[in-house]
Image 1 (cartoon, helix red, strand yellow):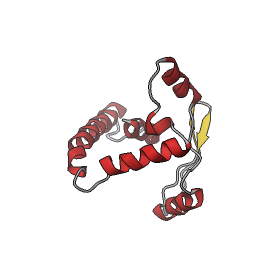
Image 2 (image 1 turned 60 degrees about the vertical axis):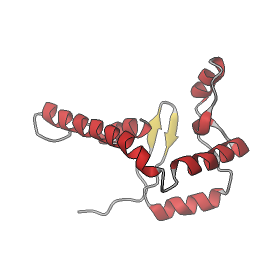
Image 3 (image 1 turned 90 degrees about the horizontal axis):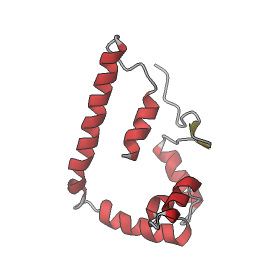
Image 4 (image 1 turned 90 degrees about the vertical axis):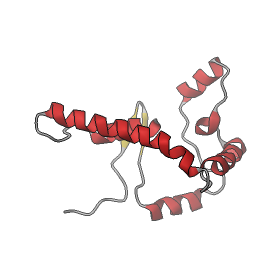
Length: 128
């Protein structure tokens, strides 16, 4: 068995290209190098939609100090050890949906295993 590469192949989301870092050490080094205000991934159609509908951007679309402030608030609300059990039912439901999807894909393949592009399914479920 070959070792897992710390960087996955390049991925595309529409016209946007990205590289995923899988190694926790490499991710930590990147976060240290970026500093307190990292360059954020921007998706102009999402921003335009939010602007058109007069909706707030939220942590996903904000940048600079606005992003940092919101991220610190989110950390307090979502990452505090006492609050984590509250998220378990939500994550469990998404995980169970993913397992059902994987089993259905395996049945439909006729070979008893997942034969499609697994990374796209993971991306969809990670967004959820």
